[in-house]
Image (cartoon, rainbow, N blue to C red; front, side, top):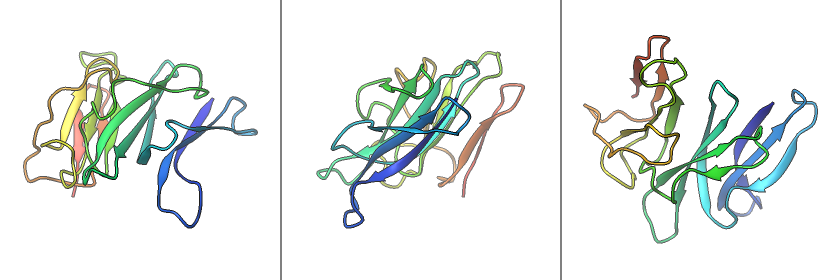
Length: 167
Protein backbone atom coordinates (compact mmCIF):
# COMPACT_ATOMS: atom_id res chain seq x y z
CA UNK A 1 0.00 0.00 0.00
CA UNK A 2 1.21 3.48 -0.89
CA UNK A 3 -0.20 6.98 -1.09
CA UNK A 4 0.96 10.18 -2.72
CA UNK A 5 0.01 13.80 -2.13
CA UNK A 6 0.17 16.88 -4.33
CA UNK A 7 -1.02 20.43 -4.77
CA UNK A 8 -4.20 20.05 -6.84
CA UNK A 9 -4.68 22.79 -9.44
CA UNK A 10 -8.01 22.42 -11.24
CA UNK A 11 -6.90 24.68 -14.09
CA UNK A 12 -3.59 25.83 -15.57
CA UNK A 13 -5.07 29.33 -15.52
CA UNK A 14 -5.45 29.44 -11.73
CA UNK A 15 -2.97 29.46 -8.83
CA UNK A 16 -5.69 28.23 -6.40
CA UNK A 17 -4.63 24.85 -5.06
CA UNK A 18 -6.19 22.18 -2.91
CA UNK A 19 -4.87 19.06 -1.16
CA UNK A 20 -4.94 16.20 -3.65
CA UNK A 21 -3.98 12.61 -2.99
CA UNK A 22 -3.98 9.17 -4.51
CA UNK A 23 -3.48 5.63 -3.24
CA UNK A 24 -2.65 2.16 -4.47
CA UNK A 25 -3.10 -1.25 -2.86
CA UNK A 26 -1.24 -3.23 -5.51
CA UNK A 27 2.29 -1.83 -5.31
CA UNK A 28 1.63 1.04 -7.71
CA UNK A 29 0.20 -0.85 -10.68
CA UNK A 30 -3.16 0.94 -10.35
CA UNK A 31 -3.84 4.26 -8.61
CA UNK A 32 -7.05 5.86 -7.35
CA UNK A 33 -7.58 9.64 -7.05
CA UNK A 34 -10.45 10.13 -4.56
CA UNK A 35 -10.53 13.95 -4.80
CA UNK A 36 -9.24 16.58 -2.39
CA UNK A 37 -9.20 16.69 1.40
CA UNK A 38 -11.55 19.70 1.54
CA UNK A 39 -13.30 21.11 -1.51
CA UNK A 40 -12.74 24.83 -2.02
CA UNK A 41 -10.12 25.20 0.74
CA UNK A 42 -6.69 26.56 -0.22
CA UNK A 43 -4.05 24.02 0.78
CA UNK A 44 -0.44 23.62 -0.23
CA UNK A 45 2.96 22.13 0.64
CA UNK A 46 1.82 18.55 1.34
CA UNK A 47 4.11 16.37 3.43
CA UNK A 48 3.37 12.69 4.07
CA UNK A 49 4.62 10.09 6.51
CA UNK A 50 3.51 6.69 7.71
CA UNK A 51 3.87 4.99 11.04
CA UNK A 52 5.03 1.43 11.65
CA UNK A 53 1.49 -0.01 11.65
CA UNK A 54 0.57 1.45 8.26
CA UNK A 55 -1.33 4.63 9.13
CA UNK A 56 -0.70 7.38 6.61
CA UNK A 57 -0.38 11.01 7.75
CA UNK A 58 -0.83 14.05 5.51
CA UNK A 59 0.41 17.45 6.73
CA UNK A 60 -0.90 20.42 4.79
CA UNK A 61 -0.82 24.16 5.22
CA UNK A 62 -4.05 26.11 4.90
CA UNK A 63 -4.85 29.73 4.23
CA UNK A 64 -7.86 31.85 3.32
CA UNK A 65 -7.99 34.97 1.16
CA UNK A 66 -8.47 37.05 4.30
CA UNK A 67 -5.25 35.69 5.81
CA UNK A 68 -1.71 36.65 4.95
CA UNK A 69 -0.32 33.65 6.83
CA UNK A 70 -0.45 29.86 6.78
CA UNK A 71 -1.50 27.35 9.43
CA UNK A 72 -1.01 23.57 9.38
CA UNK A 73 -3.33 20.61 9.77
CA UNK A 74 -2.64 16.88 10.01
CA UNK A 75 -4.90 14.28 8.47
CA UNK A 76 -4.70 10.51 9.11
CA UNK A 77 -5.73 7.46 7.11
CA UNK A 78 -6.15 4.09 8.78
CA UNK A 79 -7.29 2.31 5.59
CA UNK A 80 -4.33 2.52 3.25
CA UNK A 81 -4.97 6.08 2.06
CA UNK A 82 -8.51 5.49 0.84
CA UNK A 83 -9.93 8.15 3.18
CA UNK A 84 -8.40 10.74 5.50
CA UNK A 85 -9.74 12.24 8.74
CA UNK A 86 -8.57 15.60 10.00
CA UNK A 87 -7.02 15.01 13.40
CA UNK A 88 -7.90 18.38 14.96
CA UNK A 89 -9.90 21.48 13.99
CA UNK A 90 -8.64 23.55 11.04
CA UNK A 91 -5.45 25.46 11.84
CA UNK A 92 -5.04 23.80 15.27
CA UNK A 93 -1.59 22.52 14.30
CA UNK A 94 -0.25 26.09 14.37
CA UNK A 95 2.60 25.96 11.86
CA UNK A 96 3.42 27.94 8.80
CA UNK A 97 4.93 27.93 5.34
CA UNK A 98 7.47 25.30 4.26
CA UNK A 99 6.36 22.88 6.97
CA UNK A 100 7.90 19.45 7.51
CA UNK A 101 7.20 16.75 10.04
CA UNK A 102 8.32 13.36 11.23
CA UNK A 103 6.96 10.59 13.43
CA UNK A 104 8.85 8.83 16.20
CA UNK A 105 8.55 5.09 15.50
CA UNK A 106 11.35 3.96 17.82
CA UNK A 107 9.25 2.32 20.54
CA UNK A 108 10.86 4.57 23.17
CA UNK A 109 9.56 7.43 25.32
CA UNK A 110 8.48 9.56 22.34
CA UNK A 111 6.96 6.72 20.34
CA UNK A 112 4.09 8.01 18.21
CA UNK A 113 4.93 11.68 18.72
CA UNK A 114 4.59 13.91 15.66
CA UNK A 115 7.20 16.67 15.41
CA UNK A 116 6.63 19.66 13.15
CA UNK A 117 8.96 22.42 11.94
CA UNK A 118 8.14 25.39 9.69
CA UNK A 119 9.55 28.67 8.48
CA UNK A 120 8.57 31.45 10.88
CA UNK A 121 7.82 33.86 8.03
CA UNK A 122 4.06 33.93 7.25
CA UNK A 123 3.37 31.57 10.17
CA UNK A 124 -0.02 31.67 11.88
CA UNK A 125 1.63 31.65 15.28
CA UNK A 126 4.98 32.52 16.82
CA UNK A 127 7.81 30.00 16.83
CA UNK A 128 8.97 27.42 14.33
CA UNK A 129 8.51 24.08 16.12
CA UNK A 130 5.94 22.07 18.03
CA UNK A 131 4.90 18.49 18.67
CA UNK A 132 1.83 16.38 19.17
CA UNK A 133 1.86 13.49 21.61
CA UNK A 134 -1.54 12.16 20.46
CA UNK A 135 -1.21 11.62 16.67
CA UNK A 136 -2.09 15.21 15.80
CA UNK A 137 -5.29 15.55 17.83
CA UNK A 138 -3.69 18.37 19.85
CA UNK A 139 -0.46 20.32 19.42
CA UNK A 140 1.76 21.88 22.04
CA UNK A 141 2.38 25.62 22.03
CA UNK A 142 5.04 26.42 19.41
CA UNK A 143 8.54 27.36 20.48
CA UNK A 144 11.22 29.43 18.79
CA UNK A 145 14.29 27.74 17.40
CA UNK A 146 17.55 29.67 18.00
CA UNK A 147 18.68 31.66 14.93
CA UNK A 148 15.24 31.19 13.28
CA UNK A 149 16.15 28.49 10.73
CA UNK A 150 13.91 27.97 7.72
CA UNK A 151 13.19 25.38 5.03
CA UNK A 152 14.44 22.57 7.25
CA UNK A 153 13.82 18.92 7.88
CA UNK A 154 13.41 16.62 10.89
CA UNK A 155 14.28 13.04 11.74
CA UNK A 156 14.30 10.76 14.77
CA UNK A 157 17.20 8.32 15.18
CA UNK A 158 16.91 4.77 16.52
CA UNK A 159 17.56 6.03 20.08
CA UNK A 160 14.63 8.48 19.92
CA UNK A 161 16.78 11.59 19.51
CA UNK A 162 15.11 14.27 17.40
CA UNK A 163 17.26 16.09 14.85
CA UNK A 164 16.21 19.30 13.16
CA UNK A 165 18.20 20.95 10.39
CA UNK A 166 17.46 24.19 8.59
CA UNK A 167 18.99 27.04 6.63
